[in-house]
Image (cartoon, rainbow, N blue to C red; front, top):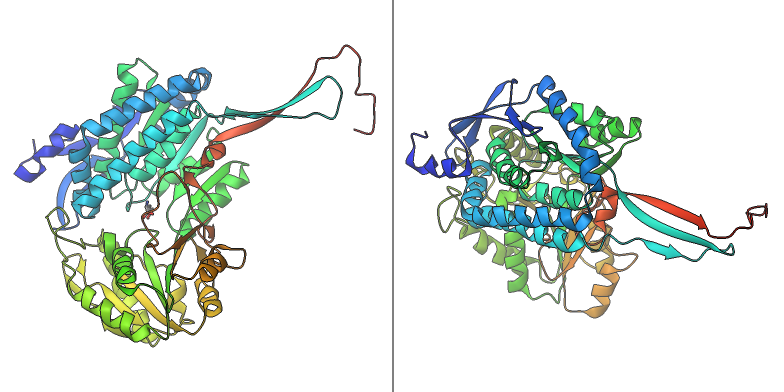
Length: 503
Ligand code: UN1
């Protein structure tokens, strides 16, 4: 039993002060080291989780490999029905799980709830998709021959997620992977194990109720050792990884060396351009939400603001006013706009980042300091666009502001960083808009007009180019990455037509 009253809701999510962090083959077990989950708003422990050992991982993977065949042969719409029930399970626990996301990750409550809602939406999306995993019939050039393209499951998909979206990112991957006929092996972030366990409990309850093999969904709490095991595991044809560019690159090289596939969602360094014809009040609100929301810990967070010289002073002044009104505080409390940074590690990189900014000639317009605990001031910085620090992803509420003279200059700046996730322009001019979204415009995976860089919907394909990794998750045709394409050629003629050697 939890001693603190405000942690007692965790019992309704199946959590206890001490928990086992590995679910494999329908069994909870764990023999690895114990980690303590910390509430970043207070820097106090919530509960402990015993992580998976490599032996636990191996046991779980055996059960997963056994379940694989049965799940691949289950008709896709039947798999969709299971995902529909997972959505119902999440709906029933929405307020509680949302609160846990907020408590353990440190994002504000509406965002915690929003994250679980995104998972529910993904379930609905995947249910429909389960009846639309269509292939195609392609005209054959040979008489009495048919050519078809069909999609089959890969078998097992590994999903490694990050602390900043501890619940929704599993949803983007698992909902699609499951309806596509794959078993899922999930490693959540080491600092958000309670969200991992609570989410797993909701999912596996559905498999158990439907008397399906427990190996279809596996959860392994752990750190780099488990991540490494997943990357090396030849039983896992696809590894979907969300995290930093550096770790993503390492995962990619391990998986590719064994001819596996990867789906990478790596660092972003997203810019908003404000042109001289922009509706400024709209732009200010968008920038505030994109740069300060989630305390700057989304991969889609706006980190660079590129403003036309004609509206530069006005825009900066309005922003400074808006920044002063931001309430920073305990994430689960009401009316807070900016919660804490997630961990001591995040705090260290914020402080390190501010030092670098100052050393590289950055001028802090507002913020720049630690308030107390894990709370930092939302920060606005004027700095030269070629300062080294601008090329890196500082995972906190720090925004760099630049002045430009033309659209060409703005696009060049937008595209000048290694990352290529999200981008946005504020303008009312159709020519500017179509240049921005066209071939010589933004080089990012997400190209917005008059809305923030964050807040992407699940119906579209989510992901980015260059150092962001090139993967696309959630909607559109992202599902194809979770399947193997087979091209079928069939002859229905008695005569051998293949003697034509020109083919
Ligand atoms: C992330 O930060 O890892 O566009 C993903 C957004 C969200 C996804 C963010 N839908 O802000």
